[in-house]
Image 1: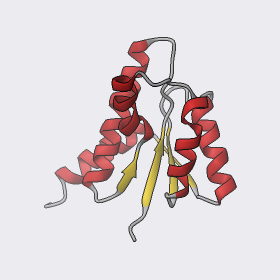
Image 2 (image 1 turned 30 degrees about the horizontal axis):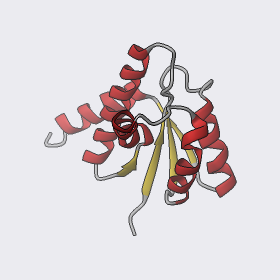
Image 3 (image 1 turned 135 degrees about the vertical axis):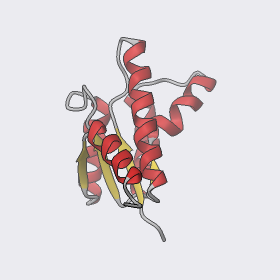
Image 4 (image 1 turned 135 degrees about the horizontal axis):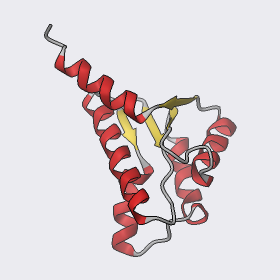
Length: 126
């Protein structure tokens, strides 16, 4: 069975433009990881479009049970350190659940991941 990585990032904000930017960044990072052969579950990438279509709540209270089930299926939690990650209710709870489950937690800079991945791909044949 392949490893499944849970990619956590802050999302909810009073400014819709901030939420859209966070959504775009996590999608870009998830895409880079997937192109490197890493299986990723990104709750924002995977669930936000569903939430929009179905008019579902955005808050942690609604998503906690779902995210807990998904975390149990994962072997690692990566926290994408977008602005607001330290204050994010969701991210802090995802870290807490991962710790309860004994799942390793890693931290990733979104800029580093995007730049490194692009550089690596551009120079693979050198």
